[in-house]
Image 1 (cartoon, rainbow, N blue to C red):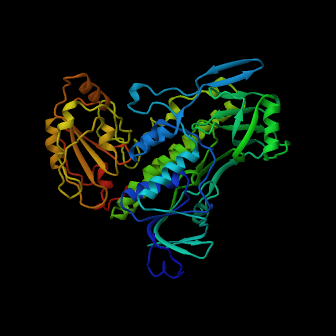
Image 2 (cartoon, rainbow, N blue to C red; image 1 turned 30 degrees about the vertical axis):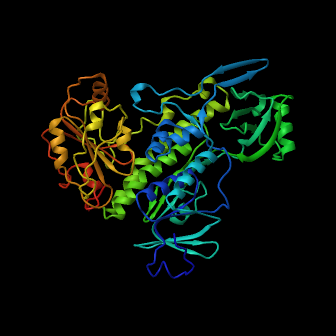
Image 3 (cartoon, rainbow, N blue to C red; image 1 turned 90 degrees about the vertical axis):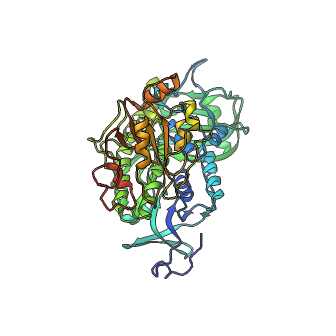
Length: 541
């Protein structure tokens, strides 16, 4: 992206990008990647001089793996990560072992039923590499010191004197977000200064990599060590310290602390990152002020329990990216209000759950050390929200706003032709090697699925405007009476009992449901999908 050194350029209408993203952590990079693949001019600036190298957030939940799938990174993430090892609770000479994370049931309809152990430095590297492959470079060492906006543009003034102009600014810059402060948005919650933990990435000689080790200790001085994936043999070490404990992050002091609390036979060496953590529990009063928006930790900060913070933030970005594209293409600006109305309730719920889990972790209760479906985030739904009114049609088990599950496509689907166009291009193609619904969803488009011959006819007539996010159409099954086990599983996953068209949003949630005999136009203003359209000026709020 071009650089601006002229402080009058933004005021004169010269923009460096459509969107400026402040913060190049996983959330900011996920949003940048989504915008870049949509062809939206985007710039990302990061105040630090180089990419973050710590393990910090290390659990990638099934729903976030589905987001990475949509971004084309799921396979790379799984190759870089690994399975969570069983917990090993050391009590005297005994070790009690059990699995911390449950596997999602088959009924969840996901190809990623297990939580992935992937340190934050690896997640960040995957996303940055993908962003750079699309021609966007992270501007490191670029600290924003002032952000202003008017009715048409935003201006970001950097510490080095540069001035960047864009139509929108998104703050993905963490709990101390300058974007949130510039917007005057309250960040309500608490920070417990008495509850501290030292986090260290290092090699530990003499420690098995077969467990996530936990040594409970009296007076709040427990210690844990989780093996990190990769050939370096690193662990993330978590050391609880009391308010009156001194903090010394030198290698010698940390090695002595590990031996004292976990065992004299252990040797800590080759430290690559260390930090002191204090639990923050905060939620932004709102996610938007005009052209300034918040994502991830800038909008909500969590305890580390349950591996929820990074996951919730990446899903924020996935919700926001396509809405920015639609508004930039001409959709009603109020569509951006649906971002907060869909995502803020999710953050509030996650904050409550992660706080509950953290209390269990502090007391080393087995129930507090076990994670289940609530943490997978597969059950998130926007039903009843601004884009999914509660009175819209539904199938036997899916509603507008629900997550669109994955399912195996029947073999015949591989030869089914796409019945509609992509945007206004009139493009016709085959589904090719698609073997699952997620193969059809992958990419920055809406997806319309037809079940039944009547729905296929309606799908071909379904209008879609030429601008903004394109639509891809697929007749996934020309009948609604199953003839094979795969067909039965597909129809059951979507609750199909009659000819039905299902519209899937770019972020993988159900946007609309149409049954046989219902009108197919989205331009009449009485159905939720009308609010998605760049040609629509109807409020989404």
